[in-house]
Length: 356
Ligand SMILES: O=C(O)C(=O)C[C@@H](O)[C@H](O)[C@H](O)COP(=O)(O)O
Ligand SMILES: [Zn+2]
Image 1: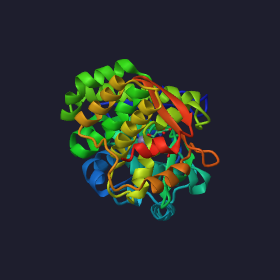
Image 2: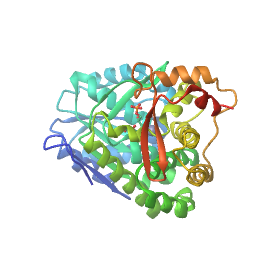
Image 3: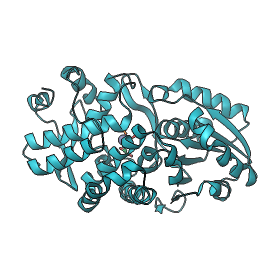
């Protein structure tokens, strides 16, 4: 698959089982420098680091590794600062690449480092979680968090290559798999009713880690995402559809210190909350709402706003959402399974009802 962004910035997504050994050759075709910095975390590094690094070394790169701790709470400027040091020590110049080997946190913070070190060096995304394969490795959003908001410090910076080996999902903990499924459900709701129906039929296969089902889900998700990114790379309009569930979701993550929910879980709560708001506003029928809620629950994902979450605190957080303008929140709300619209400034009393 290709993400088409014009002659100089289009890039391929390679998707398949057992394709990690091809990483070196594909990187070599796109990176002229002699060194690469592989950014990973200790868990992914011990599982897949050696195979990835061997492939890069065989393609002629001098390979350096930097490990960062696992967890959204480490997606910070401090972690990026550590990576700048490691890039310097490795002697990376502008022709050399950063290779992000891991999940969303690794991809986002390594991507942010690649975007800013020497004003930008090539970035290779090697996503090893479902979340990263279906979403965060594609489309060029790179960022670190600020204590007051998720992904507040970041850039649009496209990779030169995405290589997603679904074989790496074999070792993925169940919680991480379910978190990725949340974003997959998102794609069905925002733009493809038939895909949503396929998910209803095949959810158990995905939860069991069936490689064929996972490959199909990753392919469909990447196709939908690529189409959106091609049409609106820097989120001037259409791309905001990818943020369905994230207005509430990001507030939930920030207000719980990025420690309680993994991103997909927070998005799951956010998708159900947004669907409920849609029903309250008369935009979505009850049956469609139930299908969304049921699929989220069947996937073993949380669907309820926690009882102790303060409405006022969530509202303040959502007013700083990246889709907000002058403090007016724009929600991405489902109008049917397979279609969403943008709705600015819903009445506060309706939002409050979601919290009771
Ligand atoms: O790629 C996008 O665009 C998305 O919105 C995808 C989201 O799933 C992803 O979580 C993204 O990082 C959120 O973007 P943000 O700009 O709201 O931080
Ligand atoms: Zn997301």
